[in-house]
Image (cartoon, rainbow, N blue to C red; front, side, top):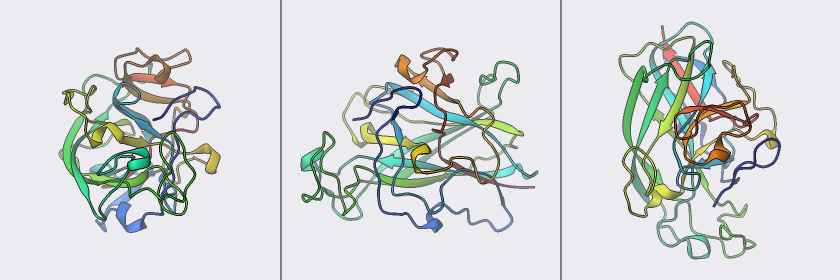
Length: 267
């Protein structure tokens, strides 16, 4: 479904969907301040994305540096890209309007080792939440064909962006943190399901350098050439220098492609 080619070439499949309302990714707590945000405004229909089943991946994330001084009671928005159809796939993709599937997703927050830039020990916060994820809409038969099907809507999108919000508890954010998401697919994750399911076509969105600047509007990306991955596919980590294949560690060659996050917190 998707492929990654390190350094300067399209890394992962891009699929655009209709714009999502800003309210869907807005943290509603009035006293909270946004301390990191690289979510494009308005949110594009979709973005390049990392599919866990397609790339032998169990966890994926990035290093962020927070602005201002608010660090308590964070709310973390993560933008996903959904390629799953309710029925069929590709040319046979069909979805009843409003249909969703439940998916448990884990948000991890790590301290970073200042010397190695690797995650420093276990996560300082782990939050598991179950979300109702919308399937991508039914295929538009007027769209041109492709290996992923014809797509949906007049723009012939292959996937659908969807924002989810985590609410970690009992954590105070450091000045810099590695934020990641993890979930199970048929073959990968902490507990692979062993069965096909919509999670096999659930992706984590990343920024798109072909669509304009990717610098965060709030906060910063201290290591813009790196993401973090736990994958058995070595191409996720190339080129050198990088972390260790099969562990959650530095993955080089990701300049311009950072996970799409928004973080708000209180004093």
